[in-house]
Image 1 (cartoon, one colour):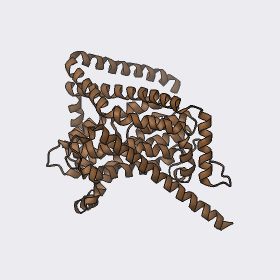
Image 2: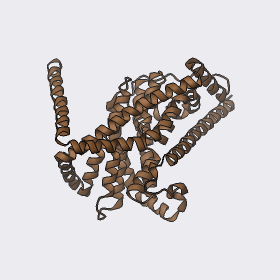
Image 3: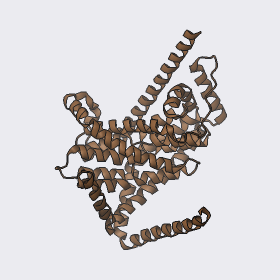
Length: 417
């Protein structure tokens, strides 16, 4: 039966893809002004926010990988990453950078590790599932301050987002249980810091590029990736506008609304879900405009869910990045669904205790975040400074955890002997 069904599936896929392309082109012809304005809006978002925010991180990560810092961290974090997430220690670098800088740097660095054969396909699929996350300033600045005008809401969104991300990483350790894994590094008698340094030194010697050459290659690769990201942002901005013009968005929202009614969830939340299905910023904005008769906990839960899902625009970017490797997109898409459900559920679960803590504690939100203006998340200096601080903090914490584990294991070994 399979050989007979395969040609039918191929023909159906060709017809479906051709129909989608024809619909898109026809819509652009029917709504040229709306398509142009939405494309311009996507370009402005990419140029004002995405490009200046992500370019330094892309370049820095490429340089760190070229100089072997990833290998250094791999030795330190091996006892932490492999037991918890079934990925090698080098994945700790991806986790730190991904949590700090947001979409799609987690996918970019995962693909780079796979290209360098530092992880297997199964490990890459586990790694990208929980390291490709939203950045903290988007949740605090764009959503909490810009849309809801309450920076304290960012605490609940961020706690739920990162908690569900780490929980997802633990769940994904059971993905492809029979898949190949990278071999556990052979331990020698030397001090673990010296072993980490030797790994870094050997990686730098093997790379062989000078600082100038490495920086040039890093800039070229980073700009090419960001050009691809910009194209996706503009294209999906046009697609969302076109779907709204022809009424498909309203039709989908009506169907989701009826489903929510059966689940005893306010039907007014269907519109942000549909908008967030395509683009997270639009979904969060629509959620903030839901009538005040809907409890804020439901609004923030929907924001958490669509932020974790990340939108089809980010999915397309990730699929394009992963297509250069043998890492499959399907496990990533499935993981996004789980992340969205977990983030929404954890938001509702933590709403009362976190809200009470924020209400009675001024230290719950950092002072520099409380002082952000409504459009402060667009500021390049604020964004780069904050994300740089966050990346350094996360890397430092991970290194300290790795060093602590190594000291503990070494102490236990000496006690045994």
